[in-house]
Amino acid sequence: MIAPTFAYARPTSLAEALDALGRAGADGRALAGGQSLLPLLKMRLAAPALVVDLSRVPDLHGITETADAVRIGALETHAAIARSEVVRREVPLMVQTASRIADPQVRNRGTLGGSLAHADPAADWPAAVLALDAVVEIAGPGGTREVVAADFFRGPFATALEPGEILVAVRVPKTAGRRQAYAKFPHPASGFAVVGVATTFALEGDRARAVRIAVTGASTRPFRARETESLLEGQALSEAAVREAAQHAATGMEMVGDVYASAEWRRHLVAVMTARAVLAARG
Ligand SMILES: Cc1cc2nc3c(=O)[nH]c(=O)nc-3n(C[C@H](O)[C@H](O)[C@H](O)COP(=O)(O)OP(=O)(O)OC[C@H]3O[C@@H](n4cnc5c(N)ncnc54)[C@H](O)[C@@H]3O)c2cc1C
Image (cartoon, rainbow, N blue to C red; front, side):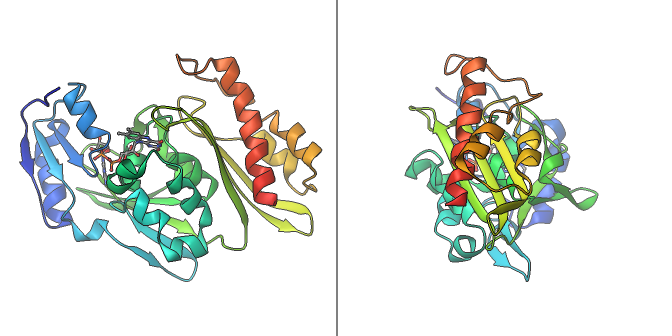
């Protein structure tokens, strides 16, 4: 499979990258790790006139911390996030999630920003960023803006990013004191999530507070399991209570049915993986 012909630019600053993408309009495409874009090009599902390689843009790299957040540059790879000491200490859910993506080859090339911008409904990161109340930093021709994770995902392969915009970084609130876990039922060949569930919550005694449960893989876009969250809020997390509340995790959501898993099976898996994630986080 051979990609169609395209012009290639490798800017060395964010301004240059925005300028190149802005001039190309709908015919331009950013390139990060290439783990999703290159297959799309080779299968001729995308045919941009210009590919803008972001790898030399310094603003998109780096993992830094402030008093209350960890900021991860869009071009940080899944592998770099998995081995980051700061991320391990402050948001261990991100280490768990990164470690469950695909295989070492994909983890060494694929990036956090690329995965979020691509918004594959079966990708792992969307569950984590939703459960962590992360904020996505975006740069565009008109300046910079921020979008909370809950407003970022719009549908399958559709996000709040406008044409010509670049996802610059993801800011994740520090959550070291909170319980957190990611439970995933992976597709056996690709590793993508048939269903993945990320959770974070605080434990006061045995009572759960500020419960967040986010699901990927099951529907056309990632979603928060709001009913289960409210059922568990303020409750003691006995195994029976968690399993009962988890039955409601997909309430109100349409499940995807495909050759990997029927909609009915995915609905069942959402309940099973939700209970697993919450019980694992509880310890
Ligand atoms: C065999 C295989 C198995 C995989 N298994 C999994 C898995 O188990 N779980 C999982 O979550 N993912 C999986 N993936 C996907 C992988 O995580 C990709 O890395 C990810 O989806 C895309 O990231 P990327 O950096 O490679 O982006 P690219 O492929 O370079 O880009 C993807 C899209 O995002 C856009 N884009 C990239 N960066 C930016 C940016 N900073 N701003 C704006 N737009 C941008 C591009 O224009 C393109 O449209 C798998 C991929 C492969 C090939």
